[in-house]
Image (cartoon, rainbow, N blue to C red):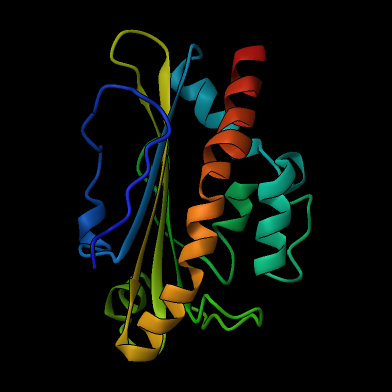
Length: 192
């Protein structure tokens, strides 16, 4: 399968400050977005960490639909640090989280990870492994750039079928990361 790549802005490429391939090297799906801000990197990261699901219009409702029981008051930062997610790595102004399970069901069918090694070793047939990376870097000229990347790897025939069933959702709604969550973070950072 060819990975899907979507970058919703025309910014110059900056090297990643960490190695996402160490966590998930061969994704079947990859969605990547970047958004520039005139705010400083630390202000942009602080703003991005404070955005609540309920402040992101459609994206927040979509996340709550896919993960039943998630309250609208929770921040994305909190969401990515608690089950069913697991914070895997926290470099400066960045958060890398993981999730495993049958992501195509409406049931909360996400086994709890106990360690980073559990995530690295995960390969149960009929499931998927998802990596969420969000980070801020200083801009090439001034300001800062907010990045978001999601990678998905499926295991076994049932896993590939399940992932194929979610591709229309991914394709149809992935731009909400850029237009809802990242836009809210940039607005907040630039108002501060």
